[in-house]
Image (cartoon, rainbow, N blue to C red; front, top):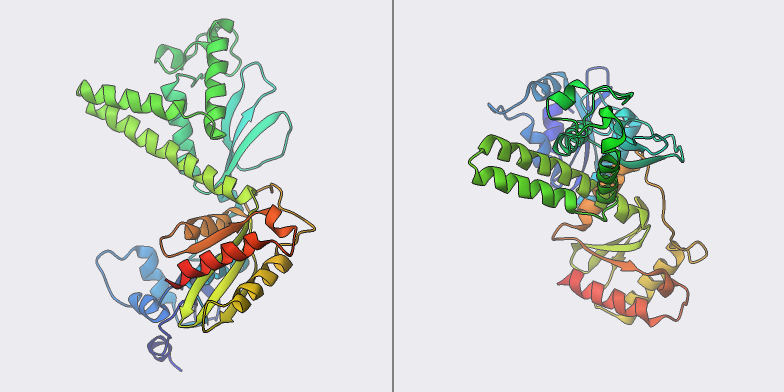
Amino acid sequence: MTLKEKVKNLPSCPGVYLMKDSLGTIIYVGKSKNLKNRVRSYFYKSKHSSSKLEKLVQNLKDLDYIVTDTEFEAFMLECQLIKKLKPAYNKLMKNPLAYTYIKITMDESYPKIEVTNNNDENPRNLYFGPYATKGIIENALECIKEFYKINCSNPTKKNSTCLNHSLGLCLGMCTGSRAKAQYNNIIKKIIGFLNGLDNTLILELDEAMNKASEEFNFEAAAKYRDCIEAIKSLMNKEKVIDFTKANNNILMLESLKENCIKAFYIKGNKVIFSKKYTFYSLSKELIQVLKNDILINFNTDVLSSSIKVTRDDIDEAQIIYSYLRTSNCKYIIIPDEHLKSINSTKIDEAIELHLQKSMS
């Protein structure tokens, strides 16, 4: 079968497609809610097409596909295949060094804040992350350092005024201990922000942006605005990590067709089990079947505890977190205490309500 025939005969359903070159090597993995429409779109010339896309189509000689029941499964499968196969045209989720951390060294007279690719778990340091976009993280930190004037260019800080101090970018740590208390208070504020406990940083930047705008200093206002957006990206990533670390017992239901649903049992960043259920009414039998699977898969012998999220986990964590927050996604969190007793009616009530919402 020719490539054109394969594209023509693709199903109009969710799935993952694997594009191959003349040697049969997989050069790109993609996913779609509608395989036929998505793959056909590659062959439509557009003035907005990138050079990368044009090269991909030129090298495309064959393709395979894997059908999934839902778009969510297509997202997860694409992520797993990209990590496993490392196709040449997939840049995201390919290089582990793309994941970065914010490190604050706490064993120095002046704690140092920087971006790093490694979390060596040194107990004397604080680490935040992992983050997937290094450029945004570096930009956010640079904005913070410039705003609080903690961008000292004298690493020794031994009574020698640095160049950045003369430029107004350093509050004077390099001149001795005079600014040490002020510097440490700023570092505490940054740590509080990264831990999600202190929003002062955003409020102060927002105030500076409004003041600059009122003074018609629109260049400075735009700079503060961009800085706020970059910093908010840190907040969003921390939400993903915090949600995943909670290691909740999540039941997600998706309607496939009339009288058929698919359940996904999720812990942390892992789909530990999935199953289709066919039914003809919202019956006690259906609720009991779901309850039994919940008790089996969310093992009560090893109840949820906080887990560590590494850079190897962040892609799946991001997919799950983002998908759970889409408008068409229906899910519930089963508390650990409800799993301790097989006779718990709390699970029955939660499942029944969840089924009603999923079927509506």
